[in-house]
Amino acid sequence: MAAIFPPWANVAARASLIAGVCALGGLAVGVMAWARTPNATRRYQPVSQPVPFDHRVHVAGEHIDCRYCHFSVERSSTAGIPPSTTCVPCHSTTWLTSATLAPVVKSVETNTPLRWNRVTALPGFVYFNHAVHVNNGVHCETCHGRVDRMAAVYQAEPLTMNWCVSCHRARAPRLTNCSTCHR
Amino acid sequence: MTASRAPLLLTACSLVISCRGSHERERADFERMRLQQRYTLYAASPSFANGQSMQSPPAGTVSREALATVPIVVTPQLLARGKDRFTIYCAVCHGAGGFGGSLVAENMGQPRPPSLRSQALLTRPVEYIFTVATAGKGRMPAYAPQLTASDRWAVASYVHALQSDTTRSTDDVKDSLMAEQIARIDSAAAAAAARRR
Image (cartoon, rainbow over all chains, first blue to last red; front, side, top):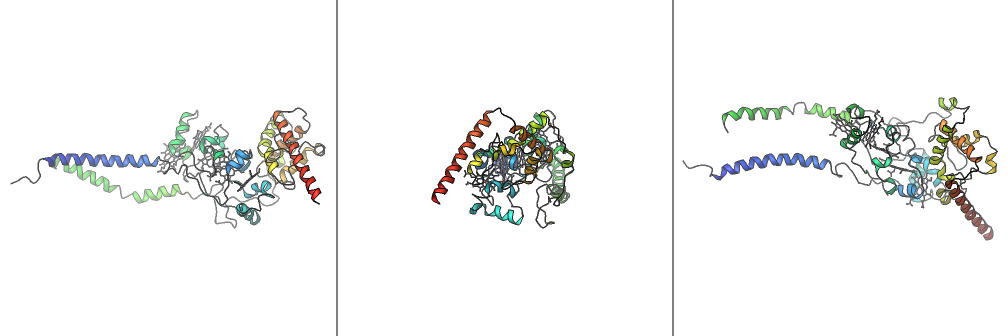
């Protein structure tokens, strides 16, 4: 009886087995590598807003402190987006009439919040706290980048678990217990 | 395939398949954690007419803290806190030295933020400054949301101390120069308007 497979089939079989294993491994590595790319962590992607609010004009141009607008940052878990009434003192004569600020005017007049789109957001199972970081000497810049140079805010850091933990590991109270962040 | 390897393969297959059983439950568990049934401070809520989860206290509410701090004791710590808060929330318009010369003031139309070191204010008690910071005045909004009652007392005390301070820091000098410049712009504009009339 003639052989069904030619002799090189042995080599082919082994090669395809090795190739298969490599492909599976490669796929896993690929997925993990992709998860770390800016695309997957939504880094560097400017978010469009109902009002084209420009941090450069206000922070770099007008020397307004971050905490003037994000005033709960030092005493609560959230930094907060300023209420529309924050904009009024400076924008009541010159700019309130311009069309760009129309949503702000409407929001103040009807006492309904303006809906800004989220830029940085963690999943619900992560309990982040701004006050503890800001009051322990971690600056806004470390986590948000140079917001004062952004026309539209984008996420400057990956905000992955590895990113959080690598800082916590390096600092004195090594806050790496899972329930520090997950509850 | 040799016979000795078959059981191994079978075990591997069954392991792979058995993973599927609890998968749905794990997924549901993970989703439950990922989208937790809780409100964060600024989350939207369909339960209230204005769509906010964080509601304002009823009008006229007085915080316990506000009552506790009325007879204030002026200490260096209080003034330091006042200066820190002043620099963030007040200097934006009133200038770092309180002379009314800030970048924002220059861009702002009439009426401009006044100087806090004027003769008129010098005669007012510290409570007056606290009241203005709490409730606002004219175009200036209330700063009660931004500053807690004790912070407002600290700021008021600092502004009061500022008025009797005659030493000048570089910030003060810059601020007063800019205030003069703004005043010159204002008087030139007023003169031009008068001429047109």
